[in-house]
Figure 1 (cartoon, rainbow over the protein chains, first blue to last red):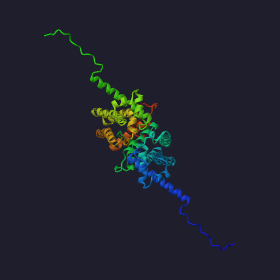
Figure 2 (cartoon, rainbow over the protein chains, first blue to last red):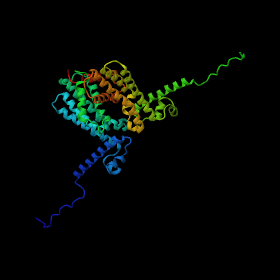
Figure 3 (cartoon, each protein chain N blue to C red):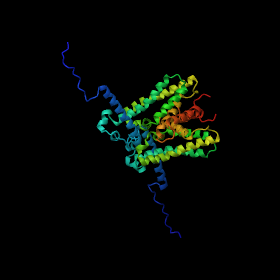
Figure 4 (cartoon, each protein chain N blue to C red):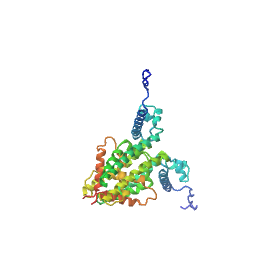
Length: 212
Length: 212
């Protein structure tokens, strides 16, 4: 039975629905990590304070604390984002039907892109030992699948005949070293794009230096 | 005319002759640098104090100051020793009559030896930006001849036909990256010697991964 009273619409809340709030929080947290990676690269990790990061984002330090606990947590997140992009590439490649060498080459492209980014800088220029024992261990754990993944691609290539017999561990170290080093020397204004750098590296690792 | 007085022999000084004192000082200074490089590798640069270094040498901190002014000066000397070993190798090779590729391979051997040493660790794991602007610049100046030298060897190899046409800058970066990375992963107990690591790298850079 209808009471006749008009249906009361809920008063509109000045707060956003909780799903939207969570999304907004994630977006802002990511902005903090992105800004921090850039500032770490510009000033060096040890010379950067949370105030520098807050000021680049036009917020106060207490606002930063709402998203991330400490500078150490922020650098950890920088590692996580950079490493995540490479391991995601690895996971996608391992699904593909290409030969080992083709997969390895695709990974070199992905890896070079990451290393030329601000995250790449953080991944090679911040000293794990300076991050405390626990954090250093957590970052090592994040990195380990990359080395293991590269070795797997090399072994797969040797098995399918696309890569000649070689020492997978030393080859993986040489490749990772060449790629990680991009984080050291790559600067804004470098004439080659990350993709072109990857192509030069692939040419070298594919054919070697000895004339054919 | 002889006065008849007995010739007086000089009283023996409890101090050593100044040449010997300078030599002793150089030996001790080198011992400080060597000990420091090892401790930096073990504890990380930022976690190492001059007390740690003094205690490893059984001396007091004031004794250290007699040889080196500061931790920053000590790490600079670690860079200088490590880089010096590579540039000395380069200088010797540039005198030799070998082809460009043979010289490059000899350099890879020398470079790998340095990177597996405590000095190699310091050279890649200590963040230049953390050393102050002036010191960072001085270290960059020390390093620059290595990159230039590798490029020269590559160009010489292309000219004499021992290295196939390639981008000397990117090839030098890839080589240096692979070699510098040894400073990150090499540990006491690694089954391969630095010379064996160099051989694996040369095999890779010589022939590439593509089956012949």
